[in-house]
Image (cartoon, rainbow over all chains, first blue to last red; front, side, top):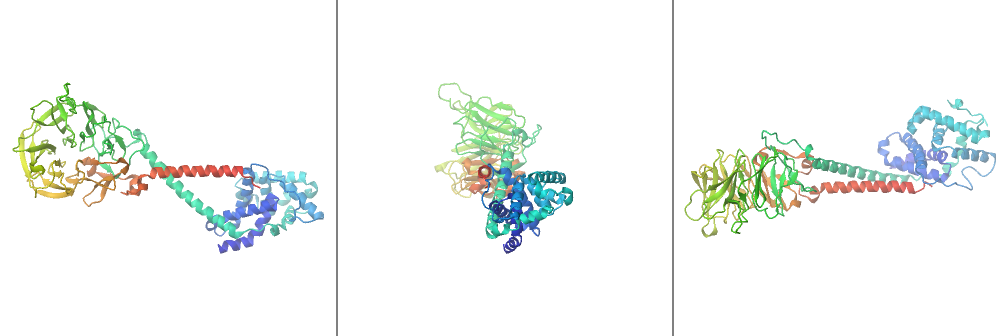
Amino acid sequence: MEDFEAWVHARGGALARTAYLLTGDVHLAEDLVQDTLARVAQHWRKVGEEPDAYARRVLHNLAIDRWRRRSVRPREVGGAHPEIGATGPDVERRLLLRDALLRLTPKQRAVLSLRFYEDLTEVQTAAVLGCSPNTVKSQTRTALERLRVLAPDLLAELTEEARS
Amino acid sequence: MTQDLHEQLDDLVVAVPTYVVPDARAAWTTGARRRTRHRIAVGATAIAVLAVLASAVSWLPHTLDPAPADPDGAGVDGYPTRVDDPWLHRDLPSQAGALAGLVRGGNGTVGAVSPRGRVWDVPQDTGLHDFPVALSADGTKLGYLEADDRFVLRDLVTGETTVAQGVDDGSLAGSGSVGAPYAVRPGPWGYWSPDATHLFVDGGAVAEGDATGALLIDADGATTGVSGPAMRGDRRLSPAGWTSDGNLVWLAMNSDGGTAARATVVVTTTSGQEVRRVPLQLHAAKGSSPMYGYVSPAGTRIVLVGTPDVSAPVFSLADGRQVGEVVAELLQCPVSWAGESPRPAFQGSNVVAVRDGGGRPLITVDPAFGATCATWASDALSGDARRGVVGRVLGSSNAWAAWHWQEIGLGLLVLGVALLVLRRRRRRLVPTS
């Protein structure tokens, strides 16, 4: 258990950040991270020396599964978002990006997270999500197009080619 | 706004770890609990699947059973190690194939047991369960009283049924009604000839003054009354079997003072003509009348059953000397033979079983039968044990779970499915936030 705790201590922050990208809410992110950690703990011996890859796969797939299994839409988390900041142009930009991300499908969010935050290739992203690289490519294209529509000022100059 | 998306995303989540703090200890506890639950579920599922598979095998239609013996008359060549009481009792089909043995249940019904332990009911009217049911040494022929006026001989390979002519249970005798000329007597089970063409059963003629001592029924259903050998004094004669050359073996016991002090084996032809007699050298005046004798398949030995101390002496039919002794505590239960070695049934912990020469159980019968007797074709006991998967796993275990593994497996399967359904329903009903 000690090695598991040490691993959580080292990687917990990164998992929390990715979970936030996938959920857009600190409470949902905390639930997602905790559930992911429980899965990793369950298979800790089998996971062996690559817990990061396994945790990444569980985290992204759990986020998609939770959305699929939901019986009602997740409640809108209104009010303050201390994790984003108090006031200022940076806060507005973050809120805009967060809201735009939340209007994507979970799979599109997962693809963006893996491709543009975790910096994985299309093939690696496809392996994590259990789909084909072509699906990743099309999901990425759709997600970026949608982001450009939802947040035109924010991502006007961003092109998919810039990342590929 | 030329920031790379990576940087924008990084900027969005930079402060998140301050507000999302994972609890490693709680996660480990949850993971360990899930691991344990998973192992239990896997184990239970494996047991349930095994149980269902084994049940399916034992419940497969008769057409999927091992092929019956061929019409040339190939008989049984093995025996089951465990005989389970079936959930659903069915009558013995016409072409069941050679049987390994018979089990008499607590309610008097007789179960026919296949070499793999499948059990069918021998169809008999109620009230006839004390009358003889005889299985040939090769397990292919069965003779029994099906109704009070109908004694049948069944060929279990061809499916042919022959009704014995002129034989009933004797219930009409003396009632003024016209019954059959011969009647079988309740008591010891019948004896098939070595070639399974004739059945030798205890019985007699209904007419008064007739000296018929037993009945001989051939495969065509023709019945002949056979006069027992002439004996001096107050002797009780009963059929005991056959010699290898097709002669009848009778056991004559004196009944002086209600004890059996002297016993004589008399061999006659099928027409009743005496061939030889062999006095058995009983060591002491032992036993209470009646005693029953059972001759070995090759006709070289006889075992006497009925002593109060449950010991059953084995005698040579060549010179009458005692050559051995076995424990036979079920007095009304025929002794089975494996070759020329007697294999009496014994009863312990509500289970009837048969042991080998070393005292190890060969066949164990489910206590649910309430069995009072089990007798086995000698060819079956001379063959191989048919253990199957269940027999290999459970051996001769008489534990409650060993006889109810199907119910336990089914229960676990139902429980597993119910838990799975509940879990899925709960997942559907509980919102993610």
